[in-house]
Image 1: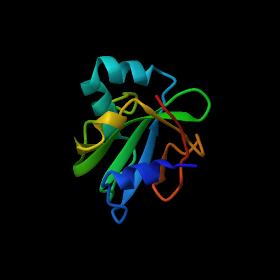
Image 2: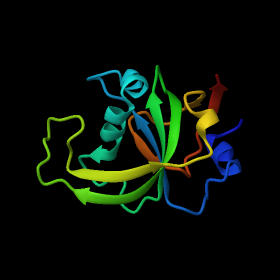
Image 3: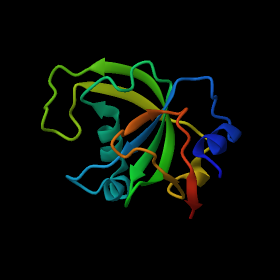
Length: 139
């Protein structure tokens, strides 16, 4: 079994940093279609959170949920800043209370949209990287 952690660490991701694995899935829209056709919208969705789930996190490793527990890798992002949005709309998909400034980390482009992992607990959409996730396939 090869894990996403092994793959990312072998590519230079520093395992001593605070890193979260994030699985985006939303019944209100197809996030993979949004990602493919309007990446700016998708990044706004990812960067805007109702709760401070990325506070004190250095990197997020981002996935989009597919059927069952499968999750497709879409990138590693460094969190550079956060601000509290006082004019947020609790009904909005992309206008939440906490807005994170995030920059995509180089070195993972050839893995984007290709690596599919088995997400251990689909109810927990964000987890610390210490939770090993098995690579199911590389398309």
